[in-house]
Length: 360
Image (cartoon, rainbow, N blue to C red; front, side, top):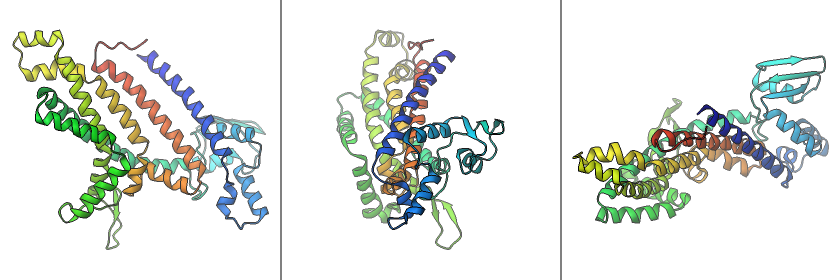
C-alpha cells in the first residue's frame, strides 16, 4: 500500500510538472502586457519599464520560467544581495524560511511554494485561493452529500422496483440531469425558487456563505444562500449516481452468491446491505470522486451566477482582468486537488471491494 501511494504521488508530481510548463508558456505567449494592464493604457514608458522590472517580465522567457520554477519549488535558490528579488519577495510574504543555508552571495531555502502576487490587488495568490477555497469546499461537500445520499437511495429503490413507474421516471430524470448544462440549471433554479416562489422559499437569487447585516452589525452566517448553488451543483452527479447505482446493483443481484444468500434464508435487507451494495459501489465511487474533484476545483458558472465567493468566481474575475498569476495559481491548485482525489479513489477501491488488489 505504501509503495503504491508513493508511486502514484510520483506520477502526480510528473503530471504537475507538465501542467506548470503548459500554463507558464501559455499565459506568457498570450497577447497583453501585464505592466500596461496594471498602470493603464496611458502610462508613460518609464513607469511601464519599472513595473516590468519589478515583475521580472523584462527578462528572457527562459529566465522567467526558471524563476517561476524557483518560486514554486519548496527547495529554492536565491541571491542574497538581490534587491527586490524572489528571495526578498518570499521573506516579505511568508516570513523567515523553514530552513536556509546562506553564504555571502547565495542562499538555499526550504519554504512554502510561492504562487506570486495578483497583478490587480497585489495580494498573494495563495491567500486569495485559501480564502475562496473554504467557500468552494463547503459548497462542494454539501452538493456531493446531497447527490450521494439521494442518488444511492433512489438507485436502490429503482433496482428493487425494476420497470416500475418510479424506475421509468428516474430514467427520464437521469437523462435530463446529465444533459442539462450547469449554467442553465443555475439560472432556472434561481428564477423558479428565488423569484417566482420567493414568497414561499424566502431564498436569495445571489449571495455567499456570509451576508452583511442591514443594520451595520457586520457579517453573519447565512446558510440559506447555500441551498440553491448546492442543489444546482448536485443535479448532474445525482443523475449519474442514480443510474450507476441502479445498473450496478441489478448486475450484482443476478450473481450466483446472491442466489445462494437467498437460498440460505437471509432477509432481503441484509442481502442488499451486506452483500450486494458493497460490491455494487465501485462505479459509484469512481463517479463520486471524479465529480467531487470537479466541484472542489470550482464550479465556475454556478458560483458566478449565484455570486458565491469561491474559486470559480475568483477565476472569472481574474480572466476578466487578465490577472495571470491568479489564473495560473488556480490551475495549479486545481491540478493538485485532482491528483490527490484520484489517489484517494484508488485506495477506496481496495477498501470497498476486497476483489480489488492494489499493485504493490
